[in-house]
Image (cartoon, rainbow, N blue to C red; front, top):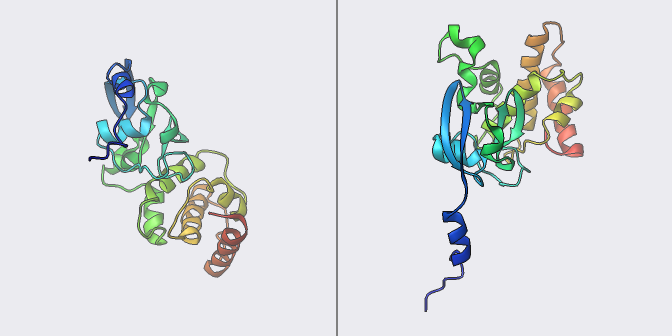
Length: 207
């Protein structure tokens, strides 16, 4: 006898078929899109399944890991927690769009965002699954008020988990870009940064 315990109840299936569909207009990585979207579709699923932008990852699907982080009008959000139709008319940036932001178009489409290069320079990833969310979150952080200390930086990146434990390198990478942006911040020595980041991770959780 077959086990159909995982089958969708007919009432639920009928509701999915008849779910309201709404037109949503988005600008994603500089490109305009007009899409017919069921009202229950999340922004994350729209990006991945409809637009093929699979850089944003579905980790926990509950807004707890940060792997799905994208930028909406420059502000970082968990795309698994917002409906696509709620972002009508907004500008979305995913990890695929970081290297071609308007301010960098003259440098060519292959130019990496400074944070992408810093992540490479500091080996700030291992398996890479969390990296797109880490990068988008860090880009959003750069446009907020700058953290004054490493502890503040770790706290403001704490919504992005790295199960490989690359937190010290992530901190180094983001701090390097902050230093270049500020033009006057003194970058702590590598040994000091490792000790500070590891101590923070041990006592206060991720990053």
